[in-house]
Image: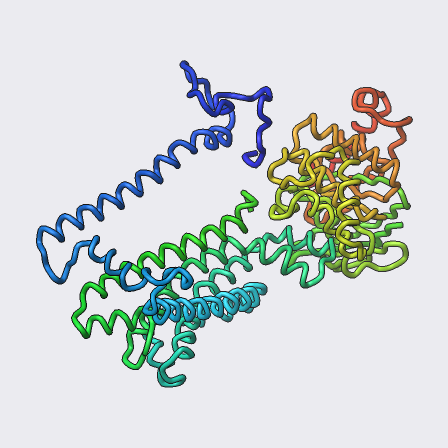
Length: 302
Length: 254
């Protein structure tokens, strides 16, 4: 059984038991793959992280050199972009967490709308997904509708919301929420549908209440799928946040900064906004992964 | 008292159980033996109220079973799936206590007491998948015992454990049965195990349409022990009798 955690120092302590020294020659056959992978993974993990950052640094370095050699106004070197981003957004007073007025006026509203839209999508997606996935029949009935809704490219829906809700925060939050809800919904439904029938029997025998079934069985067992959906939704939220701010009629936001700078041929600001968006996407995803690890990480097999 | 009265069940056209009548007095440990696929699990699930009976009735203490009866607990064979991996061992064991309206602290204390009893003192805060198979099944047994069931159903509970662990758990079960006095229905395909553990052994014929082939009281002296009891002439004779019944059932097949 691969679920067993071997006892250290037991009769079966093979080469994997010693975390520091490599296995002596001749290499004995590893007794358990679990210990083996656990001890040897630490080194490559650290080295892998280092390597990834090295590749990133190298890419930026090459970008810097090439851009400087060419001296094109359209492709400024990254050092200048970083400097500009710093001046533009992060050189404010300490009591504003170093944020400048431009940052407070544009980055924060964007993030606020995105957070609101994503939160709405997450809550609605999980709730509806559980409702749909709980019964085989509802799932079968709803699946075509869901697949259709998911297939519509989300930005194409923005014009609809513009007409219905007019420009402004409401329209933007609605666009984000309506686009981001599908991946969570579909994945949650899938997760809820694949509930182990034996566990359902256990819940019945234990006579758990409906709430206990939801909280102690359904949600935990769908959690990995829910997070798979949330990750997709998060990146969609970022896309829709920018897209909804690109439309004429918006007054603030990172997307607005982009179009505004473009209309003034301020390429440096455009690049700074792009880098900012990339960094935001990376940070948000990292944050979500951390939450997932904390919630789902406390168990191995399902 | 558990009573099955001409119980029958089918899946569509496929007849699983046919005309099963049994009376299990309070405190008896009844072993149900039969080849795999003979409907043992279906029988157990019908008694548990997880599946409805298509013919006949199941009665627990003069109340016909519809839905899961009061003070019933089930131990399934697949401990890995029957325990909730996202809960700690203690939380798993405390699950049935929610119904009893105990506070959080009381539930914990009760769970730890019962874990101690099944020989799992130090692992309350671990997760099930961090334990060996035998320990996981002990957790499942603790979860079943924690609400002091009057009727305990066990579906091949030791079927996927190694021989040594299985013997330890058989003895744990006997000890629990001696002290708690619950009625136990123990389903197994292991003939030796059924005679060693049971007060009474019932052999089912192979499906389709399983029925009772043999209903045999096990009269062996004193507290049982793995080496001594299995060597007794009485044990050997009973085992042979059960074994022949299981085999004769196979020959009956067309």
